[in-house]
Image (cartoon, rainbow, N blue to C red; front, top):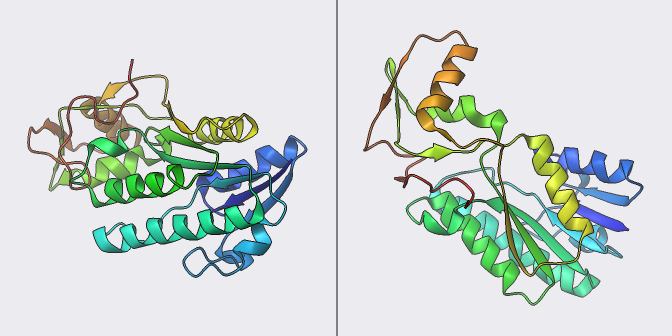
Length: 231
């Protein structure tokens, strides 16, 4: 099978390329480093020529509201257009669990807009919604730090290893299109408080952790189960 991985130089993309090649597939590893620009469309036609599957694991270079919306909507529009021209049979995109329930987050709004462009394009597709990566729990903890305290929301998080995410995206790419989304998450649903304490302990940091009803997750309030997979 010929598979084009868009965003191949990123954390998940690089793992996908290795997995798919090891499984014997012909893989086109497309990124700005290989001359593919999703914002202008440059190089996309060549990258998608003859591809059976397109895997979109792009991420925006900016998380600010307007730039991130522009990035994901422009990229998805160009990818859909070129995928149709190339006769791609399956568009697989990586997204986020709970993306449609956190409209106060500019990043989540942009990812949901990306999903809609793909699902409404008429292309056979599968959206893989993942919980937050285990590799980012230190970064999340640091984002919640105020002085000597880590002020966490009263909510659950379900970290999943990037290796597992890559495996599940690869599995989705090799299966028939769902024309829907599927949720994947880590093995445990834990509190933000537990995540932060474990992150601090791992790094030998003695900051205190405080559960704060007003704490926001990258700018958005959370419900208890906003970021975890359904039971």
